[in-house]
Image (cartoon, rainbow, N blue to C red):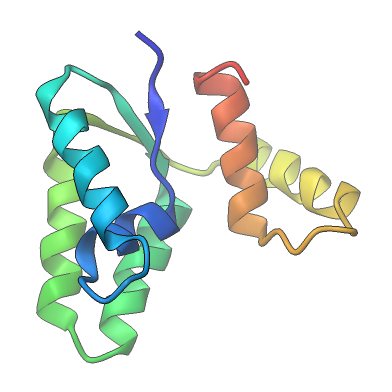
Length: 117
């Protein structure tokens, strides 16, 4: 079965009821939990999500979400090593015409490796 990459915007949409994509993300999540999918994310995505909530004064929520991601048997957390970092940095440099963040570029590299895109 093909793994599914979960990014920052998806995780935020799941958690924030006022997010414009909350309903769609929630419906998708209901389908995800019914199937034995392997979810893939990165330590950089993890950092963005936890920091988002913490910087807005929701430290307890940041810890809750972080622990759910870290302890879920369905989530494969890819930790960014030096090789991944530099591949992501190369992707970032090659996409000057896009507004991709470094985290997004690293995510693309991880998706190519784990999901074979």
